[in-house]
Length: 114
Length: 118
Image 1 (tube, helix red, strand yellow):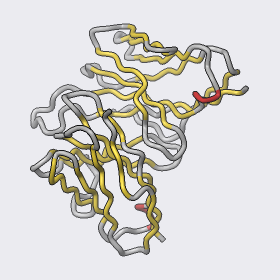
Image 2 (cartoon, chains in turn green, blue):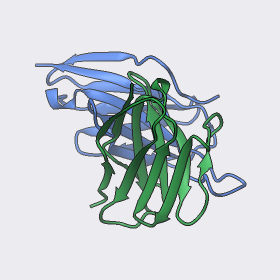
Image 3 (cartoon, rainbow over the protein chains, first blue to last red):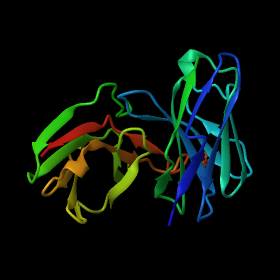
């Protein structure tokens, strides 16, 4: 149980285009989902907290107009990287929380912006 | 400040040895701690957790120790196997924020690269 999926697993796009990443909780309902970014050989950095039916809460330094988050249902959250640039290339990981503590992570999406 | 680093320390052990991975956390008010294992190109995988009212918890081949006095967390892996090779992260969960919407967010430590040699 507690499986989280992400789609796509990897994506290559041209600079200036937008990319949407989906995060789904497959066998449970998640009132809260989190989006992280991880650069090579570094730790996970929380980007935003997504609550179903409300606006996402962004961490300091994360541009909310560039990283659009939508949490339309209890099993789906999406992250859209708008006008992507090479510096946005990274590994994006989502997690979904049941209850108040345990977070289950997705497999990650590798984004490469050319 | 946050316990997030930029360059990961490494630990190399021989197969069958015990491994100890350490983590210093930053927020004395954190009430829940988790160890995750991350293999290359994959998302973090839950290993074991511990609440702040405990100082030790054991799982299968793993033990987590919590020392709140010095804000230190450790993960002990018994009889380490090549399949244990990965990056290990500790994470702390902070207390409820005033706004409530970010309650329970995790702050990850810098991570340790564990390499197990056969």
